[in-house]
Image (cartoon, rainbow, N blue to C red):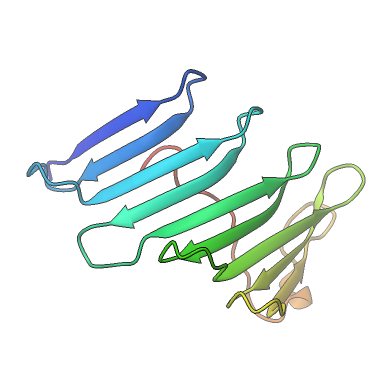
Length: 142
């Protein structure tokens, strides 16, 4: 299947724009925009899907002073509201210890998971089976 990708990068080599034309017909199907902080951390990813009338989505990321992600907030429709939020905590040597997920942005935690000492999921400590909700999908494309 033919497709066309167009990229733009900032002066530090970070990808800040990615257009995807899934069938190479000259019409952009997916537009991704990225913002990075001065340390190269992804702080915002905005995606617009033009093919299926999906709402645009903006994910905003925050980091602690060691560069570890501590939250991801999702704004669907780009209306300024937080529609869901995932937060992470770490132990004193930087191992991820917890994940908390507010699935609907109401400030209440619907899912709380803990990691074992090897940073793997001990499913028995979760209210349900967890997935890694963080992994931004921007790095290498689909």
